[in-house]
Length: 360
Image (spheres, rainbow, N blue to C red):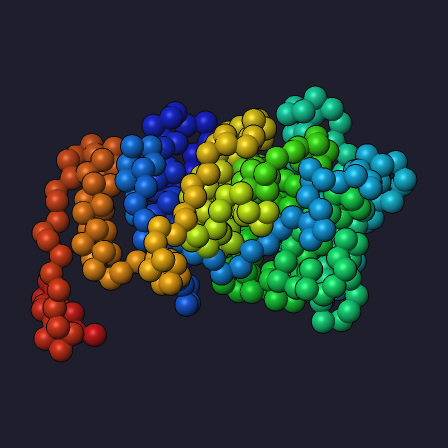
């Protein structure tokens, strides 16, 4: 993947298309995926990818940024409750990365918030909680261990960011590398920004706008020489982890737990990466539109969104030809040469491929 800030519309579209396939290939390598093959149009180019849910995270377990009535970030700051460091094991490798991300996010938004919203940024001041759910010690806004186990959230009522330091983040780090931790933190900071400007709307709008804010911060991490300075490969891997937290097929965009499909999340991250916070600011319900992936039949629901094999074998090659016939000339200046038809073979009688056996 190569993401280029300040590029023209065509370059941005090409980068987005490159990113779609690079990330999908990365996610496809994860263990035990559940796939839904569906063809959609993106910038006049048809893309077939597979999306499903493994995990969901972020947002307050009690209230959203649009429903905070007991307290506000302004009130918390006025009470002088600013908390330095994190509550939890500061020596834990995951928490060390999270703490470094928190420091940079506070500095980043102190600079960007006035430019985007015309007022001073109030730092998140209610505390940062690295929680071990099995210990029984809970952060503000969590009423049980289930609220934080396998989760990360921002709580507007207490102006708190909390995450499960056993399970969620260690698992993401193991799968996708160190930079996925700052990206998760940047998403939660997106919710803190929403609380400061009283964003209201559907849950899915809040979530994809937070994705956009995370993309804006990631571009800063890449270009501004932060402590992270991720390589392209590290950014690819982190974004694959981001996509890992997508909605499963059949999820309604109107669900109070909706976070957006893989298309929605990657597209919003790209928007923020390319354009910064100002491109994220206009998000409202319905704009940008979200891609709903409802089940289209009872048999589809019974399969959990997995497409029939025959549909994949017949449909995906055709769609890939459409995709590359449009993208390849943009990338190379040369026409796309169609591939020969897909050929099925018996694994026990595999053909040679360029002089090498395809057996196995």
